[in-house]
Image: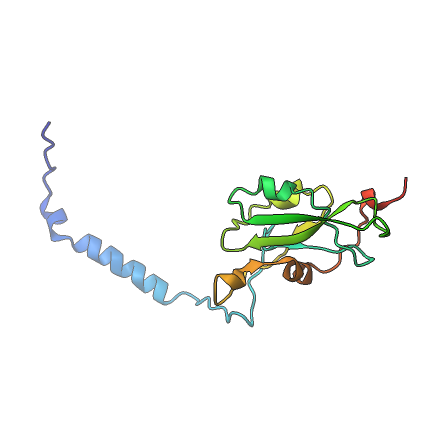
Length: 166
């Protein structure tokens, strides 16, 4: 099949309208108001439900809310979460929750910030912060361990229903 090229008129062969249209667009942008943000002093506004860095939280008594059920690890699409479960002592005041994470790591280079870990967590131990500037100098710095995740997460004021006496 042969496709014939359409014939250009003398006006289209000049290319002058296209050149003038492009220059007009350039001049309109030159005289517009500039939008420059001095980052990091000025932070952009985050509109709507923004999903940022996943973090672990503590309850008001300082206990880790995570009970090491590993649902967040199973639901994570890029497999960025790795949990090694550990056990609580039977004499502990939180003995109703029998497990706690011995190790909890999130690889922020693999995390796609989808929020599935927060939705899957039955104990509300994982929350997504309103933070978008996660940086590091090496790959090892971008693997957040349990201590770093708890430091970023802070304290959440809701109780864990499993820890109440029946």
